[in-house]
Amino acid sequence: MRLPDSVRHAWAIAAKDLLVEFRSRTGILSAGVFVVLVLMVFNFGRDPTAVSNIVLAPSILWVTFTFAAILALNRAFQLELENQALDGLLLAPIERGSIYLGKLVANLLFVASVEVLGVPLVALFFNVEVWAHIGTLAGIIVLATIGFVSIGTLFSAMTVRTRFAELLLPVVLLPFMILPLMWATLATTSVFADRPLNEIAGWLKMLAGYDIVFVVVSLLLFPATVNE
Amino acid sequence: MRLLRAGRWITGIALVLLAGVYVRALAYTPVERAQGLAQKIFYLHVPAAIWAEGAMILVGVASIVYLFLKDPRLDRFAHASAEVGTVFAVLMLTTGPIWGKPIWGTWWTWDARLTLALFLFLLYVGYLLLRGAVADPASRARFAAVLGICGMILVPFVHLSVYMFRTLHPMPIVLKPSEPSLPGSMLTTWLMSVGVFTLLYVGFVIQRYALSYLNEQLEAAGGIP
Image (tube, rainbow over all chains, first blue to last red; front, side, top):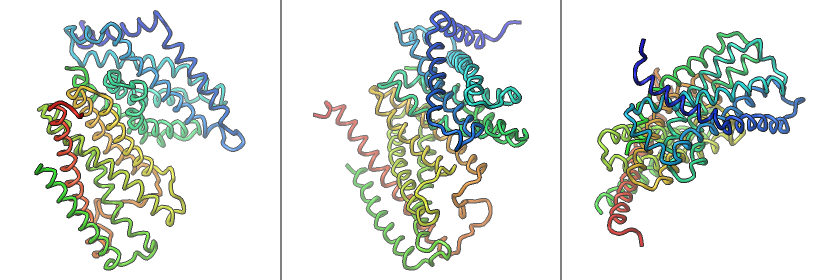
């Protein structure tokens, strides 16, 4: 069976980005080291006798993921600026939507690999029981990550061609990240505290709704960010 | 220019009417029993909040139409509406704490509603910063439109999620599915205030729109000396 062209094109772009990343490994290595350093910095700002780790760990986890995701998203279109690669990409006979989807998939995989590193580190450094809830936690992480990476991929296509790109992306993106982060943090807190699953169903539904809305909207709006 | 003058007139009339609303609110509207005089700020805070959100929605609507028609007038309107929305968001964020200090005992609390109101303000700031960071007018308009549409979509999410948190902030007492639970005289004052704020919004937007237009004319004629 042949996949539709748009899917094949999207995968080709994602594979290209991931291959570039895999060959150099600078992005993923710096992001990994960054996550370790952020977690260490948090360690200095906490007082374990005042706030218990179970209360603190979800916020630390999500703040770390936020920073890591912004780093990854800044990188996504920066790659294309060298040698006018973006013009080449836009001239290629593929749909704009496929370019967006390809970038989205590459970003998601990049952020996911950072998160795969981050979760055990949080479990290790802050002594929270993660393995018993790993399925639910993975679900929350996947839903929240799709939400903010989808909108972040759209914005990074714009901010990369402005002045102060590295600074402007977080300024524009954070108001959009705050809602999924809030829901994800609350859901994670409830999971770490061994609360029943139905307590987080509301947050998960909101996260899923946010994902659907913003993936579709980004897909529709992406052409406006690259067409001249 | 006629448009600028019209905007100034509308704003002037609205400011006079605003003073009138406050005379009515202070002298002819009953004092709320539990909150006392602090409640009077409600006639300023809620209309400002309504227009802070309303302006974002209008930015989004203008942006959608802009992406189809590419009419620079729509972009100018979206820019004007975003700046005026910022002003109303600042008004909402300053009147809130003034009320919060005597009633809650604190200027600010990280309550869901307050946090999200602050993020609405930061959304406006981000929008205006993005506009400032793009030099080419055509890309600036397109980028701003994309962000404006996303911002408009975010507003209902913010609104929905407020109902999911236990929050300190008073729940809506006028704009809610059931009948307004506000005494008649207070409701009248409040509705007058909403009307005045609508007029203020229109006046501000017309002035800002005219200024952008004049600015563009100046740039086209050889730039600012």
